[in-house]
Length: 105
Image (cartoon, rainbow, N blue to C red; front, side):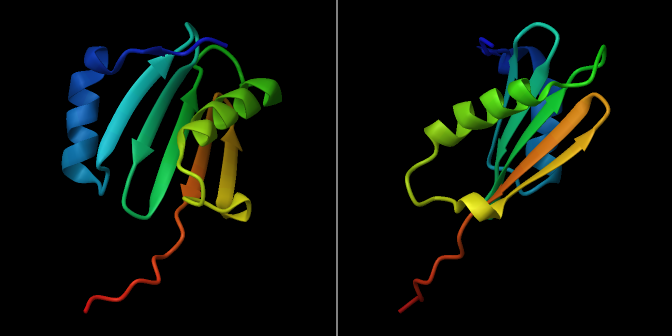
């Protein structure tokens, strides 16, 4: 699966996401039939896979998940903090960030 960044083609959706959620960064990718929306927020990262023509295969989900996990800094998530919700034609992967133990001085 080769993901192509098509964020500029979805500027209205990206703008709405940034204005109406806690998202700090939103990027949109496609491999043709599957759209992937990657969102970075202060407490979590989200990966949303959408395919309106068919259900997503486990191999596709795993490949996209690994693609984005490789981009995250080491220690920025714990493997057991990843949750996946699968629905027909839609998969949401949520990666919860660890709570910082630093206190303001």
